[in-house]
Length: 142
Picture (tube, rainbow, N blue to C red):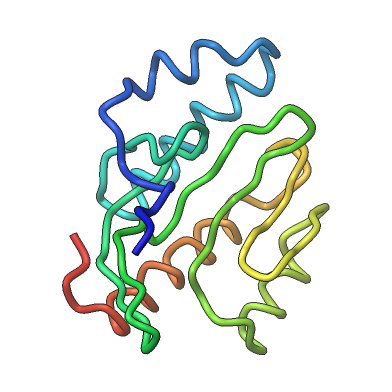
């Protein structure tokens, strides 16, 4: 079986964030680290080459594929932030997203251009719900 590309690394998170060229994006990344750390109780870790993840759990699918992942995280991409959530797409999340502010939503990825565009208290709810969902689904959450 192929090795997972998305693995936790030992790269220094602050060094990674320090390389973000845009000042506002770098400030927003620091604020997101603070928010995610407070909401998850976990320190940030670099996953793969561009994702800052918080926490860790082990998953195993019926197909036999398994690995480790962070329940929540974000990547400061050039055009926008990609925020990775783990909660199901349900009415509660839909309601939260209507209150969030300017964003786009993919299957499990929330896209925002800057923190000023959203309500941070709603983002906190989304992060908390994602962590709670993973705790319920995968009891070995670290």
